[in-house]
Amino acid sequence: MTRFSWWHLAVGVTVLMLALIVLADAAESPGGAVGAWICLAVLAIGYAAFGWRSLDVRTDRASSTSRAALVFPLLAIAYTAVGTAFDPSMATLQAITFPVIWFSIDPTRRAILLNIVLAVGVTLGFLVSTGTSAPAVGQAVAVEAISLVFSLALGIWFTFALHQGQENTRLLDELRATQAELAILNRDSGIVSERERLAGEIHDTIAQSLTGLVMVAERTRRSLPDDLPVISDDLQLIEDIAREALVETRALVAASAPVDVNGGLLPALDRVIARFSRETGVSITLDTSGYVPEPNEVEVVLLRSAQEALANVRKHSGASEVTVRLTSGASGVVCLTIGDNGTGIAPDRSPGEGFGLAGMQQRLSLVGGTLALGTAPSGGVHLQVTLPSRLSAEVQR
Image (cartoon, rainbow, N blue to C red; front, side):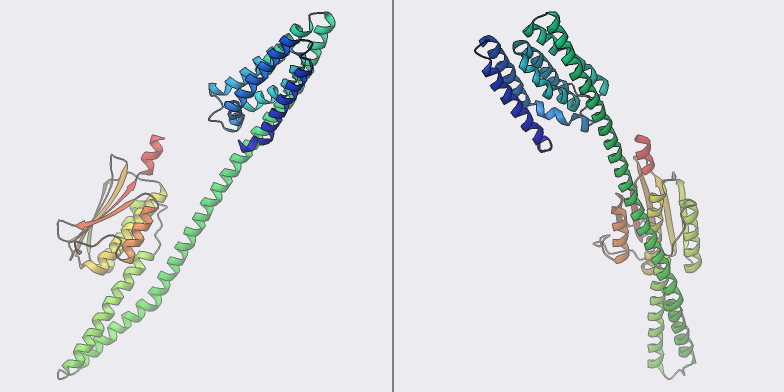
């Protein structure tokens, strides 16, 4: 109601001024004055009760075809015409009724039709109050013709400006949405580039240094005499720690390394699995027979989840066999399950524990996915990623 506060004030002032004008003519025609006051009262009460709500119809396309939007304009047309029949000065109500029609009625052809109905009604009201002599008829027709022409001109211009504004608003919303998408893409691109840079630096520096440390410790331990068991044990400990750190580092590099998914998830997943098997010697069985390709943003999340899960297998499980299954469920979900025959996890461990699993869970939550951990039949870890299918959602729309 705040948007049209100036208009509410104008309606109130117009009704009050017309009431005073009719009062001045009450001595000549008491019955006409009473009739005019009744018309003003009905219009004022109708406007205050529900008429003002119809003023937003043209800016709210969802309400523009509602029959309720026609009630007050039709009431205003009827009582403007009847009021004019009681007192010619009541024709001034057209200054309210014409704009109410343009504010309230959509489509434009319906508003034009009601403008004509109002002009005809007021013309008839003039003839009732002033008589049907030739001069009276000519004056009534001339006044209403001019009023109608100006109303149509201003109303059509208003409609054009309104539609243009709505189109500009729509284009602005699309532009903002596109800018937001570009910002997300730029951010993701920056993240991928930074992950690639860090993975390369870690591989070229820390991983190489740890490899050298393992080799030196192993060579030194083998060259020691047998009568120095304490030093040999210390060197073995250094070698074991360096090997564990090297495994962690390689897992970090593997999880961070970018994989191109533009050619599809399945080829990218084959590349990740082939590299993992080559580096670790772990046998991986991949089953994608029940998978239906998804949009790129879903497949990227699935691929990253698979990378992180395999990195955890490399770091923690000690597994020799891994099963990866990718399926598209009939209920509109995509499931990625990864199980191994390793050492398993503690029963009370949640997916949020550990940086890798927490990051996977956070990535999944952004797209409405879930992460579940359990024990595989082989005794190792069973990890399940579930995502809503974007393909099913698009088909339903």
